[in-house]
Each structure stands twice: as structure tokens, then as C-alpha cells.
Amino acid sequence: MIRVRVVGVALDPSQQHVILLKPVDTATHGDRVLPVWIGPQEAMSILVAIERTGSPRPLAHDLMTAMLGELSASVDRVEITHLDAGTFHARVVLNTPAGPRTFDSRPSDAIALAARADAPILVADAVFDEAGVPDEAVELDGGADEDRVEEFRRFLDDVDPEDFQG
Image (cartoon, rainbow, N blue to C red; front, side):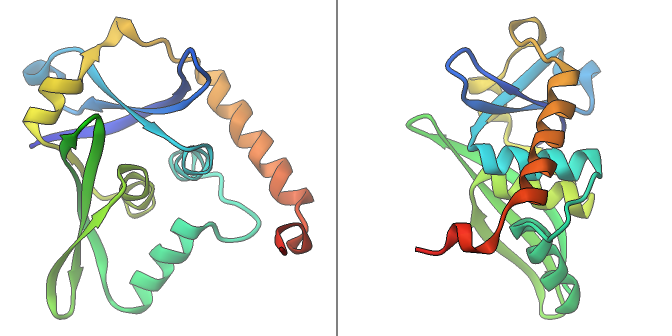
């Protein structure tokens, strides 16, 4: 497994959100990044966590983190374990009073939890070998992340619970 860190969230040419993961140890693993495509809500949740900006009300991953704390559990690590027909698979490993517990997860949810819990993010070597791309193949505009976080904050400020009633 390769330990990685989130280096940013970007939009690909088709305007899909992609989280960019880079090995912590670039001397061993080269200058490559792992792009993982995620949904817009997950992108915002990850950005809020890595920017430590918070939100007026808890997001789903904030709720999960709070629940884990109340249950005396913590995120030990998250792992992106394999690719299946172009779909990334992940798991969350928890420390609980009853011992370690592992849960299957979408990579975006696992990364959002790891970002909040300051837990390590690990990627299987085979996944990185198959899906990693050279750094220069990806352009990341740091200002775009800040703009998206600000746009999300404005949305949260203006949203009304009745907007979500069916």
C-alpha cells in the first residue's frame, strides 16, 4: 500500500469532479497522481474538510465523524483497494472498543472521513500502477478550490429545509 495525501479537487474536461491523490513519499513512488472521479457533493465535503472551513450545519461526513466519537470509535485508516471495470473500491478501517472493524466504502466517502479524522489514506500498489498518471498530465488551479468552497458556503447559507421536501 502507498500512503497518499489529497492535493486538490479539479474538474476534468467534461466538467466532472476529480480528487487528486499524490504519494506522500515521492522519492519512492515518483511524481504521479491518482485521479479519482467523484460527485459534486462529495467534492464539496472533501474540500470543506481539507480547507478546514467548516459549514453552518454538519455535513453527512461531519455527522459520521461525530457519531464515531460518541461511540468511542475512530478512523484508523482508509484504503483504496482495487479497481473493477474502472470503478474504484475502498474500505474504512475503524478502531472500536470491540476491536478493529472494516467497512466497504466509496472512495469519496472514505477520503472525506479520513480528511476529518486526520487518518492515513492508502492506495493499493496495483491500483496506483494501473490508474496513476504523471503530475504534468493534470492541471490544478488552487484558486478554483477556494471559489468552490465559497460557492458551497453561500449555498448552505441560503438553503431552506423545505427546498428538500418532496
